[in-house]
Length: 160
Image (tube, rainbow, N blue to C red; front, side):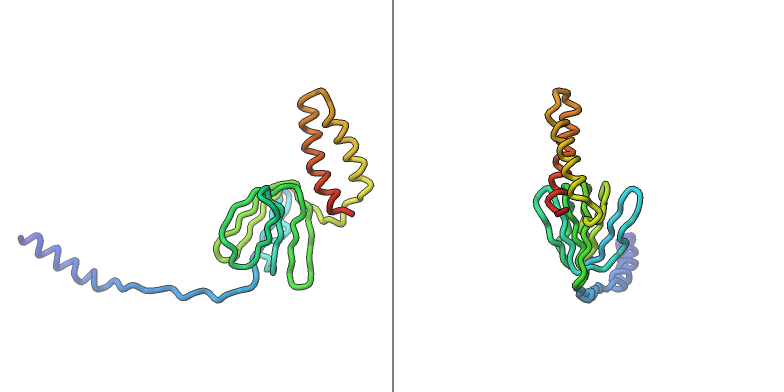
């Protein structure tokens, strides 16, 4: 009985000391914070953008501020970073994109290059070479050729 009374005396003030507090909502923003990292460089670090369009294995995805958190695998295609009236386009061959709470988008890509850096003639030449590889009787060479074709076809669609 004495033990119960002594612990009750200790617990009562402690319970009264804790008061529940509520956080205030963060101010709404129409921007998404973008980070685009490659193994060799960082192209964007906490850059404020209006919208980012990414090519995913589930389809093309447009990301705005306050987007639901998600993780997506990137397929070969173009990442568009839109800020107001300016748009920057980068071709990526693959990677991952993570949308976090608080309007943050992190993109980790294998490689990324500005779309205007590509020559349609060079793409056609490389596509012919990749088609020959894909038709090879050697399994490893054929698989390599098919991967190259997938990337080159996506690149040809944007480098016109």
